[in-house]
Amino acid sequence: MTKAFLALITLTLIATPALAINQRVENELDRLDPEEKLEQRCDIEAMGRIDEARKDMSPDKVIAYTFAPTKVNGTTLDAPGAAMRSHGHWYKLSYHCAAASDELAIKSFSFKIGNEIPRKAWDRLYLYP
Image 1 (tube, one colour):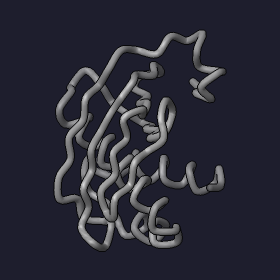
Image 2 (cartoon, one colour):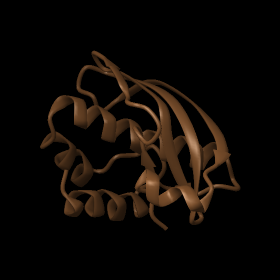
Image 3 (spheres, one colour):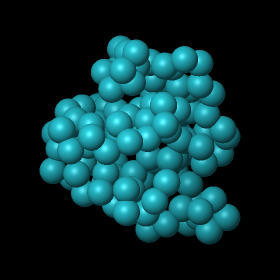
């Protein structure tokens, strides 16, 4: 995945209401292979759901595979070892995401936020401010 694509998604999300995907993001997601599309869509959903549920957090990045690989079964993705950034801090995250067959509509979603990831571990985990 290119840095330009990640930057485009991040910039687009800043201007996009929680849980809503605008046409521009949808077009970019459609360029990805199905598994990558599902992962990116679920990461977007995670940011929106956390933003809605936790007024003390404002997630701007989710990485689904920081601590463990994702598990994909059709249009369902489990990310037991994800990480989420909010207000310049990274936190452990796990989530379950079930999408419709088009991999854009989310049928069910659940998440659990874990402990903050210490700054000294960021380089080893490829996390950034």
